[in-house]
Image (tube, rainbow, N blue to C red; front, side, top):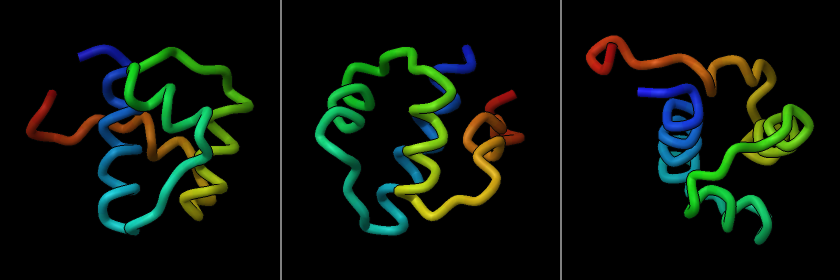
Length: 64
């Protein structure tokens, strides 16, 4: 699994668990599984109330 897939799977999980919505542009990128800039990663982490956005790039143990 590549890093973009890991990132978006983690974003999906946080959006679902926290029952939150992303900005329209971020939601469009999420649906397309688009690559994004670090600034956008930071914006998404802020929207999801995540202080350390590096967790969005951590692959779950069972997926390795």
